[in-house]
Length: 55
Image (cartoon, rainbow, N blue to C red; front, side, top):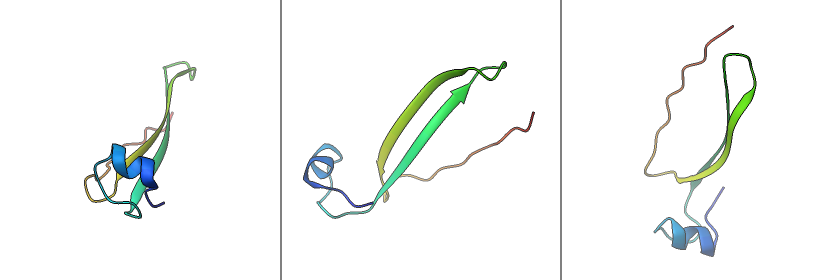
């Protein structure tokens, strides 16, 4: 994804720069959803590390 005019302004970057998008859902011990989010990040400013736990 690349930044549109609004996203570039909000993220202090230039229009057309690379962005990273992420959708996240957190669940509690019973599997019930407790938090969700849709996020957009500057690709030049972030790296991600995840740990998945099998139940």
